[in-house]
Image 1 (cartoon, rainbow, N blue to C red):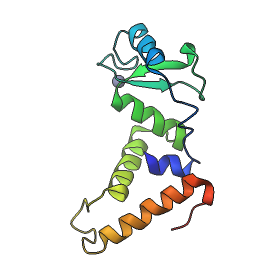
Image 2: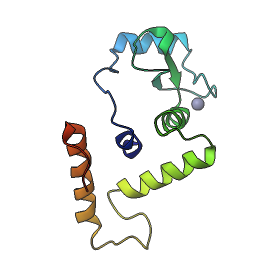
Image 3: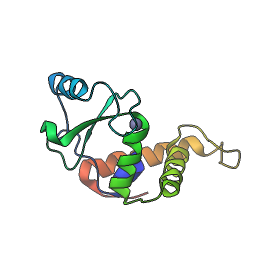
Image 4: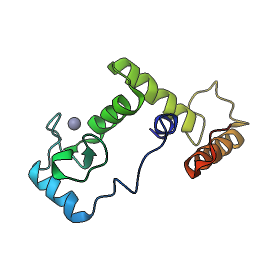
Length: 129
Ligand SMILES: [Zn+2]
């Protein structure tokens, strides 16, 4: 997820912060269920933009929230594109090698470099790796 957000220019975390009362109100309104699949939901989604108005908030389960985030931020359209993006990100940002063909000897050094580049990007220093 972070990789996609990085590619698309970052995530306005402070703008999107909700206090516990706002979160509780959305949870109650949506009866604790994901509005997409009706499974238990725990994540509050901003439907469009960062407005904290209740009309712009909805309760989602983690799976539906991740799918929506990928779709919105990366302009991915098909389930296959979303699955590929998730797989790439999980592999690239894993703290330890995911596949046997990943270089276990160099992984730690490369992973630290990658995380430093992401932190640098979010500080507004641009992308370099
Ligand atoms: Zn769901």
